Length: 230
Image 1 (spheres, helix red, strand yellow):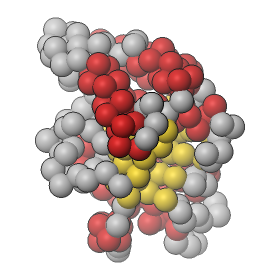
Image 2 (spheres, one colour):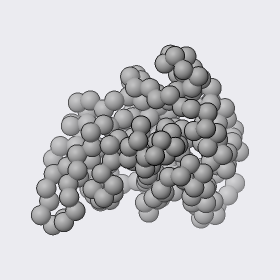
Image 3 (cartoon, helix red, strand yellow):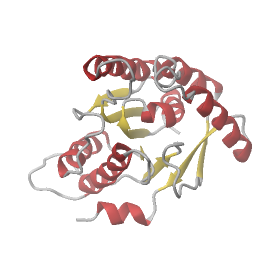
Image 4 (spheres, one colour):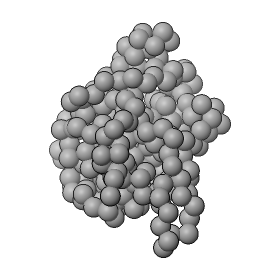
């Protein structure tokens, strides 16, 4: 799986949690992984002020990327206020044109979180914009061959996995080293034990795939073109 993979999430921590084991696998196999978080996720702490938690989230995001050998990009948008705009899609398109990924991972299109849905829409729109010639942009256009939606317990309406990647032990351990630094993932914000959940989920998906651990995704289909068109 020596590829370039971009993962686009709604908040710092989303793709780290769901796509992170796969990104760690990509890097271990000689590929390039880029995490693009659309908002800081700074309003998700019950005690810390958003300005304080924002800085903590940035540290957590950088630590995770360093732990698995990925690149980290945080767009400058506030938690809960990711706009439904061309601006976000154009920022993602610029990253796609530069990196020329083989795979783009983002949220499923239906979620309890508006930022998740808008991040997914922006990612799909960005992939479309990156694939067409635009005279004002000198960077070479690029069509992403594979677009996947990550499995997320908050994005499960209509989600049916059809793609599985085996997660080797070293990739899992790198993911654990990185995600253990995220306060929300440890259950320290609202109590949900995200790390335990996704660790167990990888074992469940591994049973379905016939391997010890696996991460599950849904391939983008016709919705890719419905949302990406002009």
